[in-house]
Image (tube, rainbow, N blue to C red; front, side, top):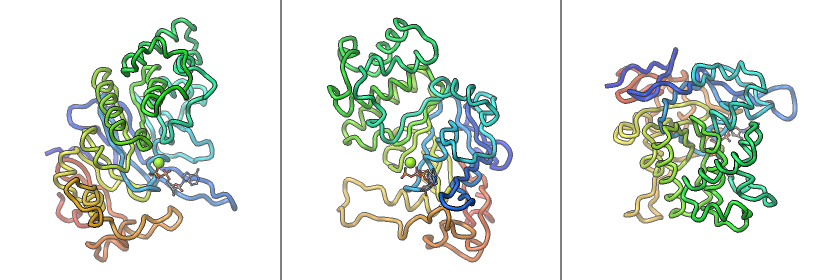
Amino acid sequence: MHMDRTFQGSPTPGPNATTLARAVGLTVDMPVQLGASSVRIVDGVDFAIGVGERVALVGESGSGKSVTARALMRLDRAARVSGRVEFAGRDLLALSEREMTQVRGGDIAMVFQDPMSFLDPLMTIGDQVAETLRIRGVGKADARRRALAVLDELRVDRAAERLDAYPHEFSGGMRQRVVLAMALVGEPRLLIADEPTTALDVRVQDQVLDLLDDVSARRGLAVLFITHDLGVVAGFAERVMVMYSGRIVEDGSVDSVFARPRHPYTRGLIKAVPRIDQDLDRLYAIPGAPPPPFARPTGCAFHPRCDAAFAPCLRDVPAVLPVEGGRAACHLHASQGA
Ligand SMILES: Nc1ncnc2c1ncn2[C@@H]1O[C@H](COP(=O)(O)OP(=O)(O)OP(=O)(O)O)[C@@H](O)[C@H]1O
Ligand SMILES: [Mg+2]
């Protein structure tokens, strides 16, 4: 039993992992266009990612996964980010914008939800991969050599010849590898991958995941993998964090969360994963829809959709408590302890 993860105080990574990154009480408020008020998108999230650990962040659309990821890298200028974000012992929220630029593309790299729009159609593949290094002061020849090495590592065939090719000469899967190469060439210790395979067909998606799996293992690279596809999580991640309406409602090892989900929301997500032996018209969907952040229900934000809800769920935000193999924020577990 791993009962050592307390939600208040310091979140820890999976067993036997050394902490690489940590968010404590991470909160993100976004300004509302009209008027001076702001809306709380991410509401006090705690988690840790270990060195070389692969952690998935899952939840329905709008739950705050991307905003959380972008807050770690301080990418949204308008966002008010509070709480703590630590990376290798440094407080990222206290860094100057210049220092933060060194962290991005250095220790922490990110691949986005829409990688295709990330490539410059007028620039060669080689130059685009080398650019991350050039910005950081690496010489031209050296940057090109390292770009080639990363494309090789990502199994781009005839990479040496293709350095001078343009994005339109590449297939979707190959372009995705180029985007990955741009993220990896700076030798990050943490890669944040925000739905990097969503736009790809299933076969190509599997190839990219295999690659990421290899690279992460070989390099000891930690990956925060964001997806709404629980099917992908099972094969790739060691640990999973489930987000609902700006909060983490459950986390734990993939094995324990899949075998014994504690939160009714997690149970719903797992039930909604399509199985090959299933008729499409019998696919389960969690009833209702997630609330917008400005109309988050009182108590447990999931209560209007939860068939197990009882009085406390309407009133009190459930504390995130340790359960066997992880943590859960659900009143059903509050009294039992596990
Ligand atoms: N810059 C912004 N200003 C105001 N609200 C925002 C901003 N960015 C995102 N939001 C809102 O914050 C909520 C969370 O958005 P986010 O993009 O993090 O969701 P997500 O979990 O990544 O969803 P998806 O699976 O669709 O990518 C949404 O309600 C979204 O409309
Ligand atoms: Mg997103």
